[in-house]
Length: 525
Image (cartoon, rainbow, N blue to C red; front, side, top):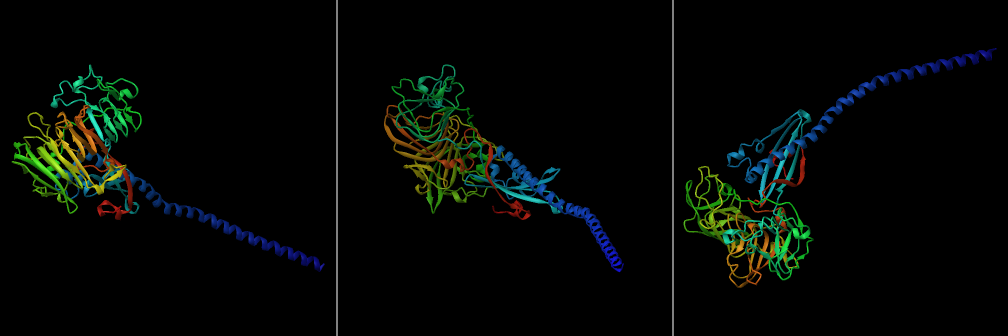
């Protein structure tokens, strides 16, 4: 009996112990369940600012893009805007608040941008910051963009018409192949045996060829009047040509969209404000054209421009700090831009970035901002005459198979309202981006009856009419044109491509996040 009672008491004790443990487990579970909402709420509250910052991180990028687009609009309207900084002397520049502080891009979400541009050897760089958010959720991101014209200097040879310039006696030449009855045979200018073009070639006209000229890169025509199919939409044999077997080493010639040539220059105002404006007469209503001789030389690693001309003087804006007294030291100019109201005779050697522009004008308003208008080449010529070799230092050129292909250190622009002429009669080399706005690049004694050797061009050629440099009978020059690949990204100051300029970013990198990296603190990418 005693044994039974003992067993009963033990079982009862065990049941009471298990009940206490169960109660403890229930209380613990209830406590845990009570803390879960608190934990969730706490986590949510803690993560909310981080989530907001993540959203602002993306919004800051969008704000920076808004700043980039704003700057590109300014640049498309005026390429001289690349020189606008917070300390710029031009009121049209400093009126842009984005150069000195934050400009609101959006109110929902709250976004701002600020930017600062720079122009080095023709390469425009824009550092732009985007800011989004308020208080402790503010995010600032800064980017650096390299900006180039979308229509860059892509061709070693570019023309509008493949015919003789009317100013050179080309009567009835201002028509394209296939337009009506086409131009007379006397208008046609031909590529022939011995001509070598190493780089992309384009014309809004159809090319005429004879013999075996060599094209080492693409050959394209945008002639909307030539309805031929295949390569004959790009080139045809010239009249009376005995044989035609051109070497197209760059592939089959192709038909592409036509391009609109430039007809005028707007570099007068930038030259007065940032470079050198050389003219005769007195502003604003008594300007006169002059002939100026420029001799380029490299002195202590920098370009020096010695100039002279009867009646020629510097007529810069009063805010322009550039010293344009002869000799001009290129490294002392705000921008390497020399504008001559008249004609330039030029030769020598140079390094760095320089643009020579000519145009003839007789009036200018008091703000010195009137764009120059094209001149009549028969009565008031505005030309660039190349009187001898015009070269970059050999050490700066990249050579392939004995021919130059690139020079990222040096770039010379020759922009003439009328003609760019070669006036020498011996082997000559011209290292430059050449643009004859209203007329041609040509040899002014092309029909002299003698052989002058080889005309070597390293850079690019763009012209309204095809300029003759030699004849199929052996007179004049044989062509050796090599494209400077650096013109894809490095171009002369204020040099506008023949088919206009629409600027676009070619590359970018992020400088960093945070206010310390904003353009207001001059970050270094």
